[in-house]
Image (cartoon, rainbow, N blue to C red; front, side, top):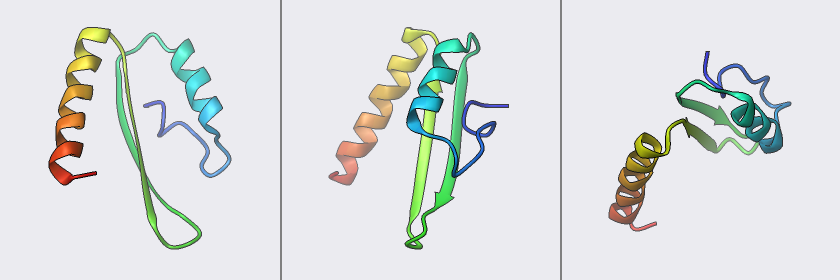
Length: 70
């Protein structure tokens, strides 16, 4: 189970997530899609592991963000 999918939503804080990531020794790629009380959507993704693999994915996400103009 990933860092995000093991959380109890909406009772989880960002600090809880960071603490779990610090303790974890496993490579993780996890996504959770939440609906806010306002009806809007919220997506949280966690990529955790070796800097070489995480940095590559971070660069790809940054490129995607730039392509979308955000």
